[in-house]
Amino acid sequence: MITGQDFIMQNGTIYVAIPAMNEAAWLPRTIDLLLEEPTEYLRILVCVNQPDSWWDDPQKQEICLNNRETLAYLEAKQCKKLRVIDCSSRGKGWQGKHFGVGQARKVLMDVISSEANPGDVMISMDADSLFDPGYTLSVYECFKTQRHALALSNPYYHRLTGDERLDRAMLRYEIYMRYYAINMWRIGSPYSFTAIGSSMALPVNAYRTIGGITAKKSGEDFYFLQKLRKTGWICNDNTHLMYPATRYSDRVFFGTGPALIKGSQGEWDSYPIYSHYLFDRVKTSYDHFSQLYAGYSDFPMADFLRKQFREDDPFAALRKNAGSKEQFIQASHQKVDGLRVLQFLKSEQKQLPQSDEKHLEGFLKEYYPGLIRELSVSDREKQTAPEPQKEFFSRFGFHTAPVLLLDQLRNSLMEIERSYQRNDANKHV
Image 1: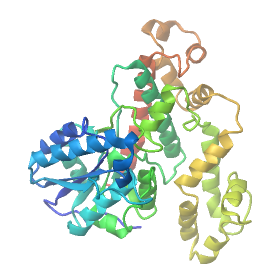
Image 2 (image 1 turned 90 degrees about the vertical axis):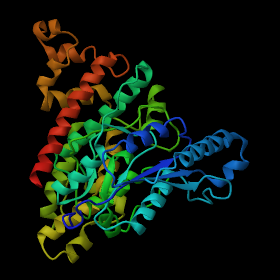
Image 3 (image 1 turned 30 degrees about the vertical axis):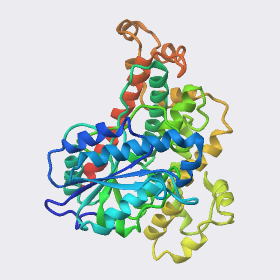
Image 4 (image 1 turned 90 degrees about the horizontal axis):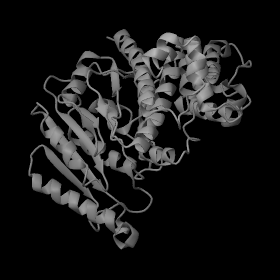
């Protein structure tokens, strides 16, 4: 495991990497916020991108012209802190199968890595990222304080828009993410992070150490953070929040934008509230790793892993190559990584008949019964309901609950998650 303790320099440069496609309406606000940041050691790189073939596709002309507008805006800024990478003008767009936000992030980060100092910091954002003043400096200070951190997965928060349908979808999605993260923290998973491309940061030398980011059309943020976590510790705490935009978007195949589109239509199959008992089975499997060092025996994830790896004993090679039990356990966590845990949860959840609301109810009753009373719609109900748990869940539904109630639930889960994040950060100071 490596750390960031030797990476950060005094007065190092902060590089911000922003992929942009069809973002002429959103990018200017993000750029203005960045240019207001109170530091001279800031460099902003924007990759305006699209497949080159779109110039000959009538259905994509609107995006092409939007990107042209974005380029004109950026060129007119004439700011020494701002640098444009044009991967959208005719003849400069993506060729072949390599395109998308993952490719744009890779181009940006590779350019930064090629010219920055090892102790400089790169911050990944989106073209619609919003944040409070001082955010970039807070990220830099985080690495100076958390000297064991190889990367930062910054805390996030989606703001309400006033559009009930959009806000309801956003809150349902964020509840899913925070519920998932809380349970990963609860069971002590090494992969307790939320992958949001606009909320990642790391020292340049850490990027070089892991061989950079792998370009993917979607999900590059998850695989990138997982790759980093297998090499070192990821900090999940900071004094400043990132505010990803609450908006519908089909720029990527999955993630916040597509989730909100599907969710607004009632499609949540890809983002279920997993039974907390399934996380318990993952925890039991984690605890069994030490026994597997002596020889193979059964455990909750055994059948799933045998099918995934097509091996009777997926741990045989790890057992053979490990020099100690500690090395074996570490190697087991790298094999049974965050992706495998998610795949296991998905495969097992399909066999359960309960609704998302029932899974949430079971979790809150088991671990946070006091929260149910706090989520009562009125003070009167808080004071008089004889059975607050039954009273609350008899009427609660993601499709019918008031947006205010969903927001209260989201905020409560956020505070629980933030507590885990702070405690983890304090352990590494």
